Image 1 (cartoon, rainbow, N blue to C red):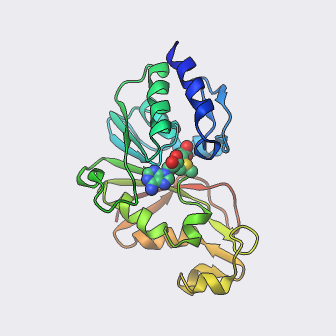
Image 2 (spheres, rainbow, N blue to C red):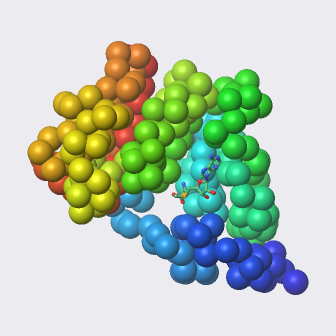
Length: 229
Ligand SMILES: C[S@@+](CC[C@H](N)C(=O)[O-])C[C@H]1O[C@@H](n2cnc3c(N)ncnc32)[C@H](O)[C@@H]1O
């Protein structure tokens, strides 16, 4: 069997909840549909990152979409990280199919305070399409950002949805969110996640938006770059 045939067989055996990102071939034809296709705006924003010659870690890489893209955009070495071993096996088969060297996949748990990854350093640390509604509701945004920050002192890449509608999207109330977050992030019926993320990194890092930003509610997630302030 070719690596692609092996990947397709493996992908079929992976539980649907772990098949997040649609898997594309190198020419962007769909190999395996996932919950989340890639959109042109995100690809465009991602291509603005200067990966040339950089070492990169991609946390929560799923099928390695952004790990492979980073390498294609010139990264010297990329480590994709996930906690699902079968998903990582799939990444290794895709790497063979794509004939990409210098992309490694490793199993780590970001919730592990003794995670061995934390003793390493990369030029660029990425947390892309990782933080979502559950992270907001369970107050796990700050620990995820703190983990990311320990992996690079040069550049952090994060994507988050700018604003969530508290009742409709988060299924909770402004009052309950005020028990968790400072009230400045709760604006009527909106939870201002992007502001929370920006302020988490201030004053150590300065935020630059890679995606176009306008006022008010917007979907999908916005790609943000943080550089030392
Ligand atoms: C929403 S997907 C994002 C996938 C990828 N960044 C992308 O955009 O294609 C989140 C991924 O993070 C992984 N993950 C979730 N919690 C994790 C943890 N604590 N440690 C490591 N990986 C985790 C999941 O297995 C899943 O593959």
